[in-house]
Amino acid sequence: MPDWKTFEAVEAPGRTDDKTLRLMVSQEFVDRHFEVNRLTPIFQLNAHVFGRLPEINLIDQVQKSDPTTHLTTLHDAIACFEGIERPHDDEKNGDTVLVYVLRPTVTIERKPSMACQAAAAVPPKSSVLTVLVRTNQDLHDDCGQVDGCITRVEWVVAGIDGLPKSHETRYTTQHWIRT
Image 1 (cartoon, rainbow, N blue to C red):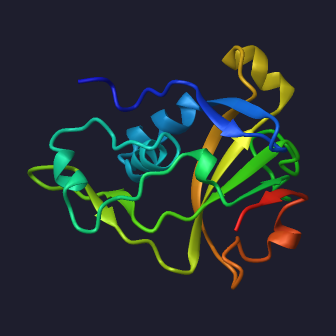
Image 2 (cartoon, helix red, strand yellow; image 1 turned 135 degrees about the horizontal axis):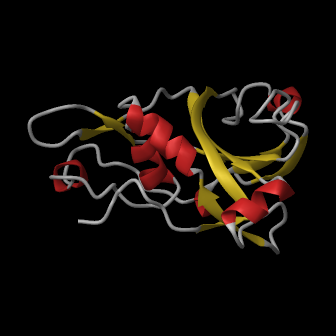
Image 3 (tube, rainbow, N blue to C red; image 1 turned 60 degrees about the horizontal axis):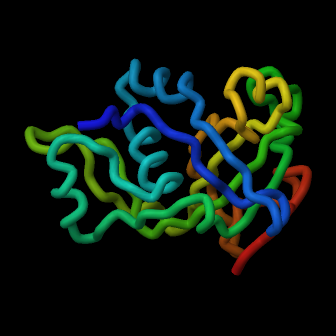
């Protein structure tokens, strides 16, 4: 069975429709969550960034469950913003952070049991999943030939338009929105 905590590069839509980005997952993000037994964000990376269920024991129980986890990739994002207006890693305002917004109808979460440590879960209707990507040039030397590094997966409150609440002031730049 492959290591479900190791991720290969993934492609994502760029700031414009004519460019595709190649992204890596921050191993620090994965290791930090694993060390404190917070497996849900790692499971959600698999399901909503890579479009697959994590390779863990008896995952077929989740695959056959009702409801079934809604698998997505960053190409299913409904919006892309840049600049998070708050500190992020060593950036004062998170200026180089891209934010992809996803709206999975069913997610996956850690649910300890004797059989499988994951289960499908319905997220609150008033929330969307955001995937934060650090695109700082300093990163490129550390990660190899990539355009950015996925550093966080966060659920945020959605506004009535189905996008993150107050996205107009929450992010510096709106690159695209798909309806």
